[in-house]
Image (cartoon, rainbow, N blue to C red; front, top):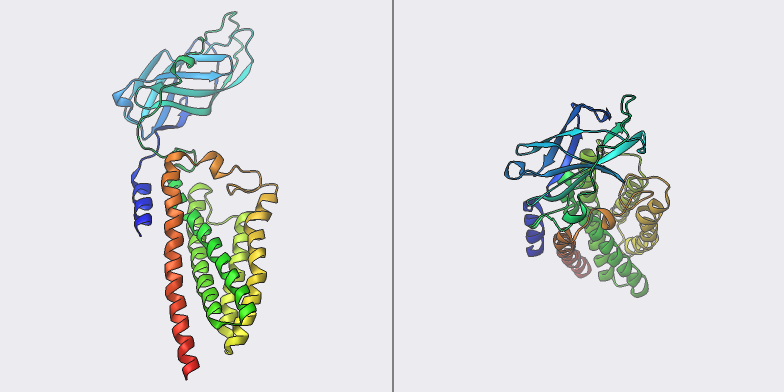
Amino acid sequence: MVLLAYALFFGLYIPLKPAISGVDADGKMKVRSGDSVIRLHIQGYNTFFQKVKPEVVLKKDSVCFLADRVYTDSQNLYADFVLQLGANAPDHVLLNLITWDSLHGFMEFDNALALERAESDTSASRRVVANPLNSHKDVVFKGLIFPYRSILEETIRNLLFHVPQWFSMIILLLVAAIYSAWYLRSGNLEHDAVASGFTSMAVLAGVLGTLTGSAWARATWDAWWTSDPKLNGVAVGLAMYIAYLILRASLDDRHNRARLAAVYNLFVFPVFIALIIVMPRLSAVSLHPGSGDTVNFRQYDMDNTLRMFFYPAVAGWTLLYVWMASLSIRLNKINLKKALNS
């Protein structure tokens, strides 16, 4: 409970890193070069622009434009640019927007604006500046923060709820499979009671993992469920373990129930691992991180601050389920002793 309280309280309390969440030029994402002034509306997230006046740059490779004027309020920047492409510049360029200041550090928004050469833009010399970023690379945001990721935004905190459920489930199912094998060797019904208790708690973790994942999908993919290899594998795997519980409930003879449940458990566990880990990674396309053509959370979303709370959350959720499983096991053993004594 201490680990969970630590991970979940700070996981919900710590703010996300300031970031640029959107850029447009009077509602347009594509502009033409020329002599006229173009005003960009830059939307900030967890920013405090009224306290500072950032430098603003549009940049792609050797093409780099520095804003002429910058206007600020709490969450928004307004930057005026004159975007002229020279004779040697490409006719089409997709510019990234970069801001930096002493409070927020560097913030970058990729593919912020598409710039197309106008027919009237025939100036021999480009209105560009030398790269002003090299001397400011050490400007960073100071403080304890979580990473800001486009689309995820605040839902990145669900990492502390959703992912630990599946870590816990796999650990509990592994223990249950070991005790199932142990029962087949010993014939001791207490080993079957342990396997049953751990599997029941693993199913609970799987149900909670599915619900938290569905809520996450609704927020990021705009759908409660999609036909994704990872999600489909989870649905089939969870259904197989629910069938395990139904199998146990349908048999009255304790030894028959324990034997069939143990064999079923040992068969289902490797299939479950294949469905939720192996097959999604072999698929060509997937929305779920770490599957198909998507990047892993470890490579993209996790940072050292988030790890400070993610791993305690995994340990806390797992230990909570182990404790709950121990209560179920004790109850099963008490019922077993009563049945044997009668």
